[in-house]
Length: 142
Ligand code: DQA
Image (tube, rainbow, N blue to C red):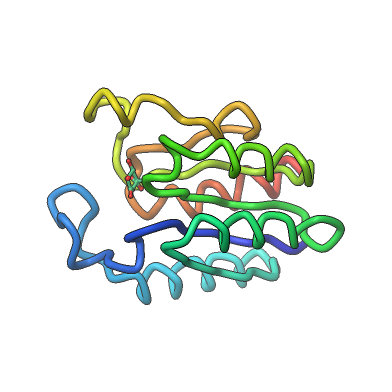
């Protein structure tokens, strides 16, 4: 089984960025955690991060016929991007939306998620554990 993990803008700043909201784990440490979890389940994992919306669209498109699942934290593009929604719908690859923080209890503008309707489920507010839970959801789905 192959899963691609896609992280959007500012997630490379984990550990530095608003630690009260996103915690103190760095992005590199998060990647290590995801790799170890995937290895423990014999899953091949590819982890990417970009601050640019088009990169995220390209990486979603590339999963077509090549990956069994996508875990995506689109960061702020969650609340703005129809292009990411369309890309997930285009490839039809089972996708889980992840947010480190509990977006439902934050600002009004974070209540909208364009990508959500194309996803198998949304995991929010579980911290970095959400990425591992998302992988487990895909294991059950695919
Ligand atoms: C986030 C929540 C988004 O609202 C925010 O823009 C992020 C991170 C999260 O993981 O909690 O960049 O996706």
